[in-house]
Structure formats: C-alpha cells, structure tokens
Image 1 (cartoon, rainbow, N blue to C red):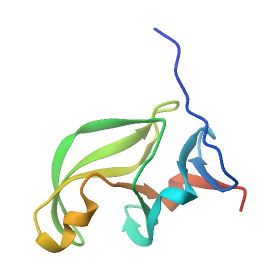
Image 2 (spheres, one colour):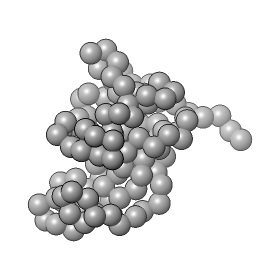
Image 3 (tube, one colour):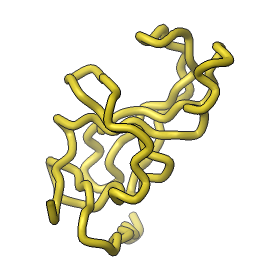
Image 4 (spheres, one colour):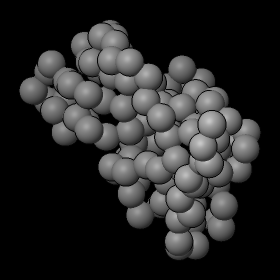
Length: 111
C-alpha cells in the first residue's frame, strides 16, 4: 500500500475529522450552516479535502429526491457526510456538487 497524501488547509478556522483530526474543510468554503443530517446539524460546503466517496445512491431526503455519495475521511474511513451528485427538484439544483459534513462528525479548530 502507498503513502496517504493528506492536504493541510491554511487559515485560522478549519473543520477536521473528529476521529483522526485530519483537515476536512475551511470555513471559507461554508455555503450554509442550516442543514440537518443523520446525526443532527450539518454544514453545506463547496469544497472539502482528504475524503473518499462511496458509490452513488438515490435517497429521499428532507428536501426531496437526490442522488448522493457518502463522504468518508481518507485517513480513518469514518463517514463524515455526503456529496450531492444530482438534485431532481429545480429548487435544489444549487446543492449539486456540494458536500454535507455533519457537525457531530467534525471538530472546529481556531474558533
């Protein structure tokens, strides 16, 4: 097995995997803090790092039908949230290509 490449984010406010403390996202990439996931509150990001994606899956979420990929920490493989692949409702199209990270699965550094 090869070496794991881990990207370190610059900036004073960073979200990290709660389990292994690897950087996951920058506060600059937060689109919204008003989302809900499996474990409670969640954040919508336009960019995340140090993740791997699960297979595409169709899900009925609170806001309608979506095709999503689960998002896993590339270091410890814990599930952190999901990525919106496709939204079927026109009002939800802004989510496509964006990521949900669950507040219970990440920790804030520099706040």
